[in-house]
Image (cartoon, rainbow, N blue to C red; front, side, top):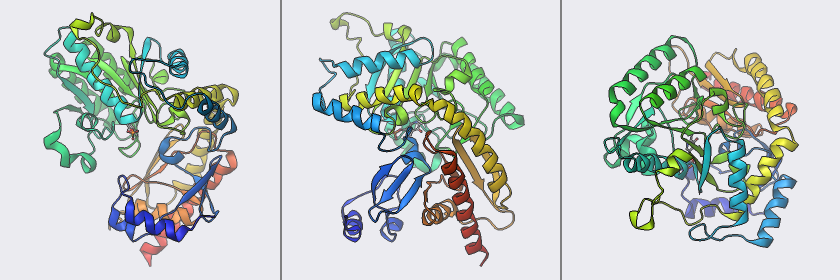
Length: 442
Ligand SMILES: *Cc1c(COP(=O)(O)O)cnc(C)c1O
């Protein structure tokens, strides 16, 4: 058994956690997760929690899945790591071919890295370099949606728009063209955003190298959602202007919206597709940037011409991660994962409507596949700024892990969640919200 008290004390002494107010953390009793099994996580004292946000939107088929575990062990016996700089290896090759098979039409090249941030940073640099090498030297800027999130490296932050995370770094960033985006799909808000966005694309067309979008769901923005018509219209207009289209499916990819990739519903192929989070089933850090042959051609030339892509990470295309990613893709077929997503989507919709919509603090519920955002607010006296955090802490006491985005509660469970677990997850979320409501009213 683990000594939980010792681990907690040591954590507070030596660790620095991401996106975490460390002062509040130091005053808290951090949950130490020791084990995962299916959609449950267990702490060091053996207590079980539903993984309500898929371990930060990564887990697909559950923790400790025998097929993924076996793929990892088998690969470990062969080769844990070798480089893709100057060498190659079977798992990277096979996975690339398999990704191209399932990806939207026209994407024919796979460039690996290890996080969502690197996958978008790479797409941005590739789009820029491709335009430069095609002689489109005036195309030096990128268009992005308001409240976009593409990761935390400086290039990814430059095309991001979440003020709380990004404002401070402004002096370090390159300037992007921000297009308005709605909070909910359809309706007047979206129509107004779209006409504004198209006008901006038209006005800046000849200086834009690329357009980067999170299709269907802007996750980190608080599960902002738009219709497929909205993103399709943007993509079509960008294409007319010779602007390269980057689809950041780091969050929505691998089944979360109901199709393997959101772009299938949009009905368009991008010039770049960024993948990470769910690519390895949520097991290991792996990312991929897929590109078209047209983009790839812009990098072809003799070594003396120096047209190659000047970018690469040391652990790029790690064999262990690639082997697990291949097994995860196979599971989509073997376990009819998308079939479960369809059932789960319908069930979650009913449960949210019945149990959460009636709560007086719930002002909007958005859902796309298994991705859910629940906005909290109160008429008259505003809710405390840490309302989301408080509800998440209450949910933990009832046995579910949630991680909110400000005053938006987020549910984004593994795709293998069972019907009974979905019921528990929504029930616990409601109970947690009731607990906090009671505290506030007291
Ligand atoms: C999480 C996320 C990223 C960043 O991925 P990291 O692996 O955390 O670097 C980029 N884009 C989107 C849409 C994401 O949700």
